[in-house]
Amino acid sequence: MFFEVEPREYHSAIVDVTDRCNLRCQHCYYYREEHESQELSKEELLDGIRLLRDRHHIQHMSWAGGEPLLRRDVIEEGAELFPRNVLNTNGMFPLPRLSRTNVYVSIDGPPEIHDQIRGQGTYERVIQNVREGACDLVIFCSTVNKLNEPHLDAMIAGLSRLKNTALIFAFFTPLKSYHRVERYPHSETQRHRMPFTLEERDPVIHRVLELKEKYPGYILNPSRALELMLSENAAACTRNCNMTERSLTLDVRLNRRLPCVVGSDVDCNLCGCFFPFMTVASREKDPETLEFFARGIH
Ligand code: SF4
Ligand code: SF4
Image (cartoon, rainbow, N blue to C red; front, side, top):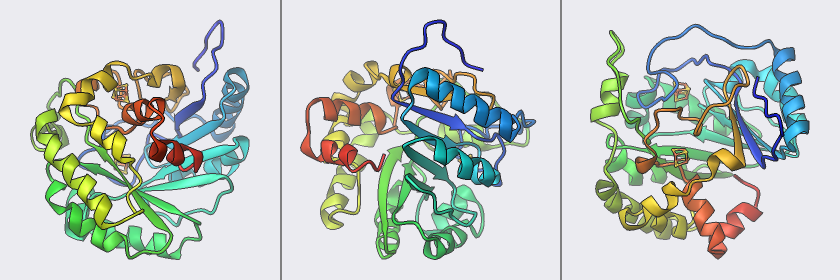
């Protein structure tokens, strides 16, 4: 378990509740190959999380995985430990109604594209669970890559009809290097068919900015944070990313995952996570970004 001799304060933490998943998405950083589960028991995990919460004054917990709802009991008990929580789920299981918790559901395109990336029939199941769930707000989280970027408009047209939902975009973040895994083609897809260069990403960011105008209030990425992702601005943000100081990123055994959840080989130059860009926008006191954080939906 993670240990610091002189424990620092971390505003937030992200924990992999499980290293298992019911899906094998093409862009997954967790499933580039099969692995044996190394999960802690529920008691070990929650006792460890309590200890880390108290030692590091963690206020905000993100429950991730794998698919965290494979351990629904852990999530239901764990969410009681923090003033604010985020649940990151693939939406394939009924959505729990948890106090003080924002639910992020992954969606990667309109039905045929989402199914191509995540598996046959997954789109329909996710939408059914969102419709039948009793969440006050479901935030769809879409990871934009070369496979789904031509279909963003069609995706939003479908999603925005669903009550009590909103959408946030991230961009696919590649690794610096990939190794080939026998009978597991996703590494090749991630290496060759998904990543944008920063310059290739620019027109897509401009399209997202246009979509924000077309669907007012639906897309949560602040415009300034999107502008900061443009090739002329991105390096200044990612070079100064303070993820490691701000957030305790923990693997399934509560060891530190550095520099962030994607793992040690992540290519920060091509980071598509909204975090470093929102951080800079918030330092600039961009009103839309400050409002995003004030709403507590992150
Ligand atoms: S749902 Fe998440 S953890 Fe599971 S395979 Fe897809 S991206 Fe990976
Ligand atoms: S990938 Fe992005 S969020 Fe992660 S450490 Fe690098 S710059 Fe920060």
